[in-house]
Image (cartoon, rainbow, N blue to C red):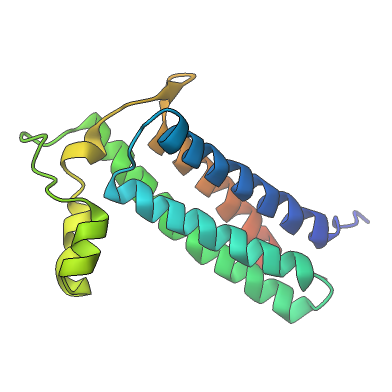
Length: 164
């Protein structure tokens, strides 16, 4: 019989990976001067959610139901981030005709408009959301985010559905 690995190290590894990814995002922003677009901000929020649930899962790993709930929260955040990253990747490959139609930044939208008005503008993803400012191994930041979100979603799904 194959034994399943303990879940606490898996939750901890996810927590540390998210911390490293968010730190790298801050380095890209403050160290290299790459300003995040609204879709990038949403992905950061999703990464933070994955990390928060992973941290809670690390602390609650011995409590089966609580650990599964943390894994389910991780899964929801990872799927939301994956969808956003895939949407941005698609926009980068198929930019709209007017690359400057994105309008004001996310902070301005949140402060001045109600949720029902600014959320659709964020997901329009035009303008700066289509810019490819940095690549590594031929993949954009959005591509790398999608890859990481897919890994986190797979891990979270396994942690949620595992036996034992």
